[in-house]
Length: 282
Image 1 (spheres, helix red, strand yellow):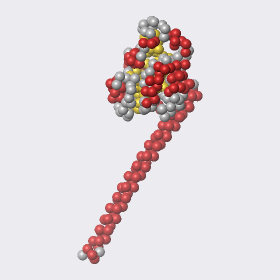
Image 2 (tube, one colour; image 1 turned 30 degrees about the horizontal axis):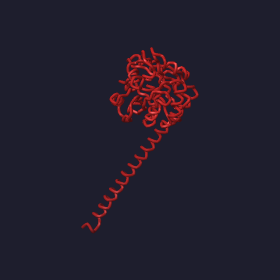
Image 3 (tube, one colour; image 1 turned 180 degrees about the horizontal axis):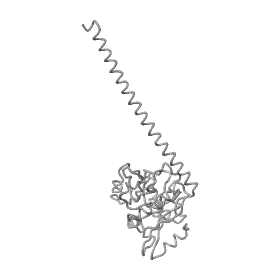
Image 4 (cartoon, one colour; image 1 turned 120 degrees about the horizontal axis):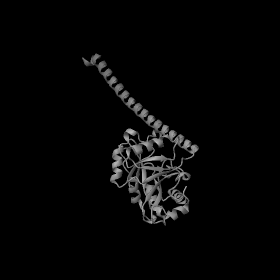
């Protein structure tokens, strides 16, 4: 892991410059995040990252605030969000407003591009984490081929093979939900004949689009990954249980309405039949 003083030494070099970015980190604005953006920015600066992108689930307000505060920590400010599409999660990096949710993957990718951002597919093929399936991964700007929350490493290797086979740039990210895992995986971006002070968010986005990236990092400890997967599975099970309960309640209500309707109709028909048989109808 890069030491803090090494980043400062790099900033004084006038030829090739490598910046290190963690493009996938969650703050306490995510339903499963734990730490404030201030602590995340401080941690990123201390371990020698040059940029960290807060990509909370379907909310962008804290990421925008983090991008504004980043220069105070010596970091490059880049906003972003992890948006839920109709086909899985997508990282929208460099956008300043919330993309539409639950839309088709290709439409969301185009929306991100139209708003000046980079569309990165995180943890692809991992269905337990809302990863995009291969049949729906038809276009993007880059693929997250190393996610430090790996369990066996197979899906990371599969993501790398897919990116290589289809000509997509690769990025690495920590996908950190706890402070101590920020920067566990990161992306190296090299610029030629550039000073650190001249590098901005637009240059980083262009470099990702053009594939000037190298994946770096190491896995999150297995015990932490196991807990993370367990919590995720429980939340997913709870979600579907809630959906099932709501549907059951809707069907029960619908059944009661139809039952009441049929009962009322039967009663009216019965009353009419009795009336026809009574002396009053003659």
